[in-house]
Image (cartoon, rainbow, N blue to C red):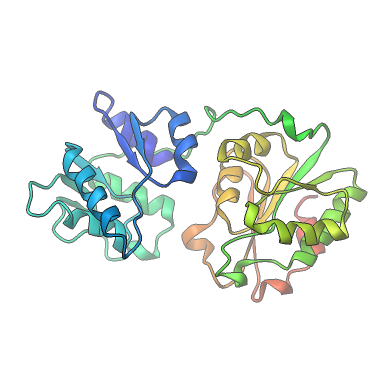
Amino acid sequence: MGPFAAIRRHHKDQPITLLTTKPFEDIARASGLFDDVWTDGRPGGSDLSGWLRLRRWLLGGGFGRVYDLQTSDRSSFYFRMFWPGPKPEWSGIARGCSHPHANPDRDTMHTVERQAEQLEMAGISDVAPSDLSWAKADVSRFGLNGRYVLLAPGGAQHRQAKRWPADCFAEVAVALVERDIAPVLLGSAAESDLMAGIKAKCSEAVDLSGQTSLLDLVELGRDAVAAIGNDTGPMHLIAAVGCKSVVLFSEDSDPALCAQRGPAVTILRRQPLSGLSSQDVLEELD
């Protein structure tokens, strides 16, 4: 959220619209950093009507400047959708844009530093770390009255090498219960089988898969003893809010480029990730 806040400060008297996807809508609106949030920005490759709808929205938005913080091939292609013009000012890596991130080594930079440098080249130099103090949620419905540790055993389905074995998470869960700490499982509804496997070995684990919003994750992170998880999106939010976080990396992703940032983050990396023992992870909580 740091880059968004910096853009808001720089354009304090101008309307700002965020183009994102549906899962991020609620937290984006709650941030107060945007005047509008649009969530129809990822049409499929063969979705002609979706692409035409996106182009009409871009052309009709009256945008004076676009900050492309994703800087992917897809998002850079959006610059071409303003053909034949006029085109807005554009911060990113699209060929011919007005404010290019002109660093040939940008792909070797961590996302945080890369985006800060990109904005600096566009005239914004006050990018601060993410401040999530505004993010609030009522998590009383989960009934977590005592000490708990958040566990995020899931991740992208197509990148299984990024996942620490479920049995290892189950071992950690059992050890936490022995310490009178509740293990709380976080993930999507699609990961319910993964969570069920962990609960089969630790019945005391609290399964919240498919029940938490991004705002819920922030609130849960504030009060947690710690969090342990794979290199997943939820761990970025939890770490940023100040929760003691142990994040597990394999060679399938590089912490130098995408490690979670926060005041109390420990990165453990093994290849393969199954070579990391539950005791190795538990020691980081002591």
